[in-house]
Amino acid sequence: MVLQPRCDSSNNSADLQVGSTCLCLGKDVRKKRIIPPRTKKFNGLLNVSPQTKILSRMPNIKIFSGSSHKDLAQRIVDRLGIDLGKVVAKKFSNLETSVEIGESVRGEDVYIVQSGCGEINDNLMEMLIMINACKIASAARVTAVIPCFPYARQDKKDKVNMLINNYQNGEKPDDSVNEQLGVYFLCIHQSRAPISAKLVANMLSVAGADHIITMDLHASQIQGFFDIPVDNLYAEPAVLKWIKENISDWKNSIIVSPDAGGAKRVTSIADRLNVEFALIHKERKKVNEDKIAILVDDMADTCGTICHAADKLLAAGAMKVYAILTHGIFSGPAVSRINNACFDAVVVTNTIPQDEHMKESGKIQLIDISNILAEAIRRTHNGESVSFLFNSVPL
Image (tube, rainbow, N blue to C red):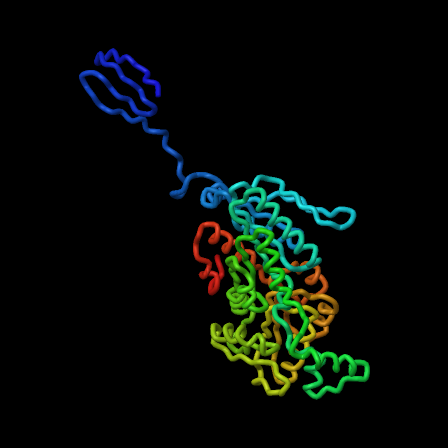
């Protein structure tokens, strides 16, 4: 530290200036502090851009997008007020996936957004490579944001094959499957089906993921397949908001599950709306006349189940039929089945891209859940609880 003498002719004393503090040596020994210029304020906050404000609250964060759903990733970063990270994903001539992270992630809190849709196997491999690339580049933490978890339906070994189920329910198989049934009965208690959801969980952990954020897992026990933290968010708050804003007579509705597996989901929604609920079963029962039936399920692939359920509800006396789904896969004949069915609307979230499906069918409507994922990322980065999102939609 350098002491710079300064003469003051008025009091014949010498000042020694140390940084921003003046020590006055002489008759009057006093301390003078240099006050920095006043910072302009706007409405009580520093007069800086919104993006700078958010960056000041969320330092050391990077969000990257895979190839599956770039629109959702862009909505998330727009909500957070930061830029999407630079990444280049390409394929070699032999269709191997190559990923290059275009900026430093050393010491950063990294989030990789990749949904289980489209070319699922390629997108899954791309996500694993991105996770590993960030991990070996010294990222402090890597979180995989997977709105629609791939292979979630393969979460257990089925004890009885579908053909056996049909046979025991009284449906007689034709001669072409009699030989198969004999083999299946021998293996009835030793199914060789894989638990692929567990395999995906292992792959994510080995690749280097430290945390998983997903939405409406097909089976909640998938969380137990991981040895790392898993936040399973719910679309239910957004669904409730859509129902109240778009169905004028929602108090006269009944929440319906197309199968017994969704009973817990529909009872939760029915309780929060204070309306009745029902399950689709082989035994036909009448629905109260002039009721609005709202079918709720976590996912729909070819839409055979929900379209069949809609026909049953209409025949049982429902006035209108809506379907609300978290993951609209809509493969094969799904869109044409929706167009030919009696739905007033089929509502899906954007965990999977829906632009093409909405062009093909005017019945498909969208619920944007990017605000829920963005808030989950913000809370995770700042070390806050995410349980608020289980019951509320962020503003």
